Length: 338
Image (spheres, rainbow, N blue to C red):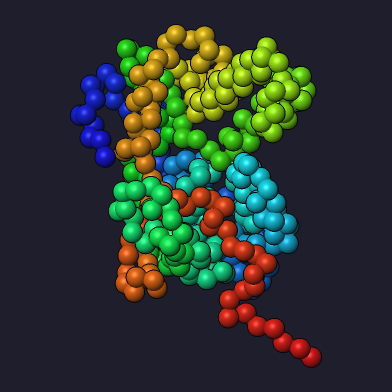
């Protein structure tokens, strides 16, 4: 974790609020209106978020178990390239408070999904692939089927790192005498990017539809060199704009003058020479250092194959923390007749 003195004073990252000092939210002192008050005896899962109310979410959110509406959305996940918009919809069907789960950070979502899983779907995460011997140097041998098994991971063995107590938003980065104000990315951002990309490139998508189909089928002989080059230029432009939209959504303002719309943020990134590469370097260094928080990507578990406890690294994606809702509840649930 980088120390404060690792960077020059003029370029230090701080967490001072955009309009002066911001009073920190109390961990248990925030009241959020509810969408629907739980019925008497109705069970909810209370999640005390590791961000402690210092991002968009309150310190505590409550969730119902997965319902039929969320189960239908879960069934759509395997066919989707971008899972986050659907996961946000799923959580919005479950959250008790009147809160848009698109405002959550992805690590807050993981924390919520783990709590819901532990309360209603059991204390274990199932079928996570791991290497029996992760030290094998030869790639083919490392990836061989006989070197891979499935882990049953106790949720209790997972670690969630809290957001540092002195960190809040906006994240102000000063370089060259210019202060650029950033925020953490939110779960809704990927959906916002997708929608803006569809709007911006609607005509080009129609124009290059046939070439795209042929290129994906690797039928390059049916495409002229000029058309293929034009399509490659189009893909490069798309990638550039996707990065631009993604970065814009983490940009709050310059020198404490806030941006109010996505268009203002995009225009600032394209035309404002006050925003430099160093600002982004310091911001990214902050996110991976002092500003890092959330679920650690490693866990200890018992390996049936190795007959011992082992620790392995895992890529805990949000959708991998959602249970198979059609696989049945655990043994505590009962079915009776008559």
